[in-house]
Length: 557
Image (tube, rainbow, N blue to C red; front, side, top):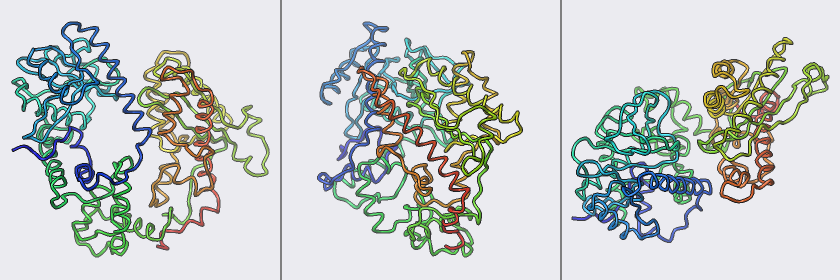
């Protein structure tokens, strides 16, 4: 008997409540959140990358290659794909596999590769699928066949669960139409570097090490199919709303948010598994969480420290507080010479802008300009930037110029017996691109050794303001820069300032889509970057001032 619904491979990593709403016929006319421009742009970029790679492979593989017409409807694509498989075509690009009504599956895959008596699926994705190391099985991009694969001494696979689960979905579709080859069940991924195919054994243990990829997929898909069928037939809903990370970009968030706020649902202050565990012991509302006495639990549903934190978050949320001090006196390390740093990157392609704001704390008051004059470096903002579309070797130049200025200032400060401090907001991004730049551009003029960068990021000279906020404040609404800076009286000049929007501005600034570079968007990006470092500075100064004591103290809750 055929299923009432057909689901694609992405469903297994999708929120269960979203699966319900996507398949509930009563929700057809319900207003959804507008599409996220950043997400739309990433989808468009990925589509263009796949098109370019297909053209490249088509030229290399010649008569062995066929492409399913991209403009055809789904049924026509399915028929063309099946016909190409039956004809034994070696490589089928833009494939749409025959739908599996019995299994409730449908789906497409970027490439099908002939292997033995059947086909194996290959995904083309616009992110990295391998890192430096060893352990991956790869084949050259011009020989995208599992038979050409061997152990790669330079790469280790990245554990992208979503990619592997999508491959498992494609394998099940191939099995349903009788086109899956014998032997181990395999799938491949081609990442953003476009150099090799990384091959995955889908019968091996998953990233969690507990079961195989296929076992994980089968369990998740069966669950999502049951949720969708119940929604489609008007049965009892098998998934209720709960706030998770995915909610931020979900079209159904306005619907779920209204329901969650009306119910004071506990997931508004704790997320994921913590909300699940609290519900198991009868704590479903923020009010109930706020009233808990942690000491009363013989076996608390969460680790004691995390449960106590959750109770405080709930109390702060009920009082409408955006921040609560954990400590009687807030403290952040300060220097004689201070630099706030913020980096702008474009996806995984590189870091095009390093912004630095130099300040001398003595000049915050009536002090002299002694330090500035001694160092001979004027305070203010500097942007070290490349406007060559990434990836580009000019990225090496802009990073080298930033590092030369930055490290010379740090060295001169130390030589004069003064304290140097550099600040960022969440060091993960800056550390990643500083280390990555040193590795990728090693040997180019002005590029520092990796160890020099490692020494800096592990030193007391480098302060992560995000970590200081996390350790000294409870933040019911989040710890992001744009959540915290308004508490310090800071606001961005651009009302549309944000990471997702900056991606669109960057494309216009460099003429990414074939148009003339937009100088106004370049200025906009520099202003946005400058405001980010000034926001970090504002938070630091506020934390060092008496004004921070106006924030309620945790014991007051």
